[in-house]
Image (cartoon, rainbow, N blue to C red; front, side):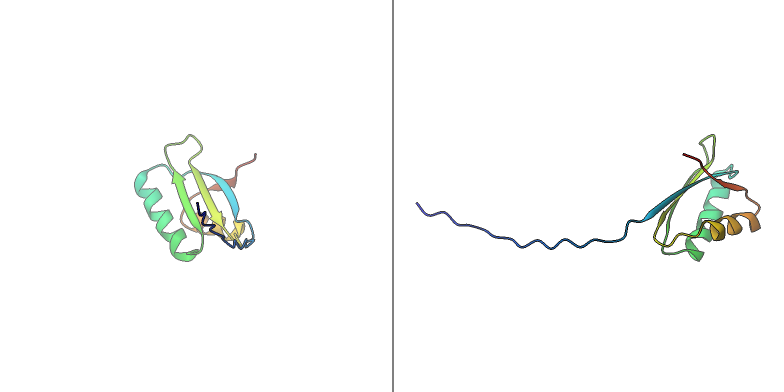
Length: 88
């Protein structure tokens, strides 16, 4: 009886952990969410955004590397929305 051995070489690459930031907003409707998400994605294309306008806190979740909270909040503010970083 012959047994074949399969050997694999695994290389582990460590990548800097991404940052997740959660904001409480006043984005109330689906159309408002679509507009602001479009603007956020256009300006910060390297980040991932999701917004739950049906949640009581109107939660905006942002994930990515080199995330700048102040710039995100400024974009929300100039478009008429409030945002506060959600405390844990």
